[in-house]
Length: 298
Length: 227
Image 1 (tube, rainbow over the protein chains, first blue to last red):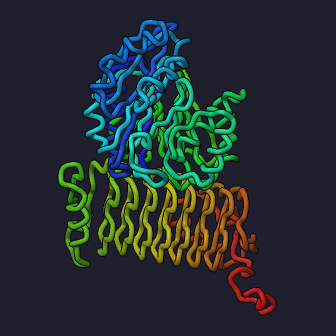
Image 2 (cartoon, rainbow over the protein chains, first blue to last red; image 1 turned 120 degrees about the vertical axis):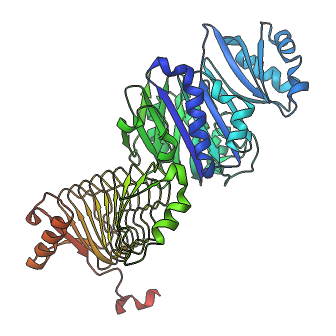
Image 3 (cartoon, rainbow over the protein chains, first blue to last red; image 1 turned 45 degrees about the vertical axis):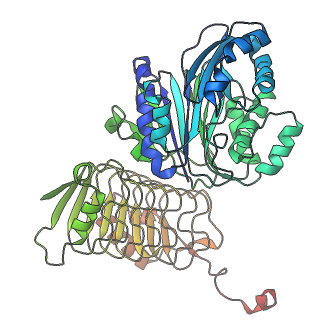
């Protein structure tokens, strides 16, 4: 069992409140996933600049000179904004791949959570309310975001086993369920050169979608083909730079509720997660159909 | 009317209060406010009382109900009226998966749509859905009646025993051992009664009846060597 929440804003005036609304939804889903929590938030962008979120178990030591070390290694200005165990590095967009390689060499214990123009990912082991507090999630702004509360089944309770997973620029995935063909698929994708860093089943799902999109599929097409190629139970919520998608496996035993108003589209594993959203009384509330891809974009 | 505020007084208190009502209680009419999608609202009741839930609920609303009439002015999460024994449960909105699962008796009315596995393993409950139902509904249903005024999803009545299924609209596909059957006068009478009790605006003649072909669950001596 896990909990998923998602919020895609249509009304820009709500953007300063995205973090607080999403945090409230996330904490409500604690019963479904008390061991870890995470959030992907799509916030500010600046032209030509990319953001990379990194995580360290020893942030004081790792982050102290990271910006200057990295700047020297990749030959461009790097800014660092630390947030507890995570830090967001900003740099010239075309330096991201070099920076990722440099980090692997300079700080091998550090993990790269995401990169892209808008995405930031924060995730840790612990109760959702504690994870939300340590990163001040409720003060974050953005156009859309996805959160996850984890009750682990397929891999250990660790930071890298927590969701969301990002395996491509500005992409992320959260999952409720369990994939049963992830080992075979992981081997296949790694042979194709796709980056997979944990033994977690969901990361394979995320990598699968990234691989499909690298080969020319749209996100919608990638989600459609996941229904054929992924075996197991899943309700997926995915995020891209300007969009938000949902798909459930054909059996659809993992719960999902959606609500839409003129101001937002919201997702919750349970209706409880949605009850404090503005105007929920008059929202269109429905359960997404099995084996059907839903997608919204700005 | 007695009123109970779940947000203020908690869920345990609600169920303890409602379960404490005896057969001859004079507090026969209750409203539950601020359910806010909570799970297990009004479960395990065993008295002829009326309970109105003002809003939507989470999992297992009205589960194990006996005697009580429970009305939800909203939608319900998975497992509404699960294992109901008697009484009536009315949902004004939609129901999530496995509505009325394993129910032994009573009447469940869903005025909106029900999703997958509606009436799974039903054992005597009557279920009337004004809208549509999802896939795998009435899976292994043993007894009782499922009436669907709209359409049914894939694999209706898979591995069906002796439950009676009536669908007015289309059936996307029938499950293993489920077949269409002739509508006889006694079925029209049964349907007319259920539709009236469920407040459904539909005529019995508009429905088709489905039931078990009885090939799957009966032992056939020709298959003895397979065991």
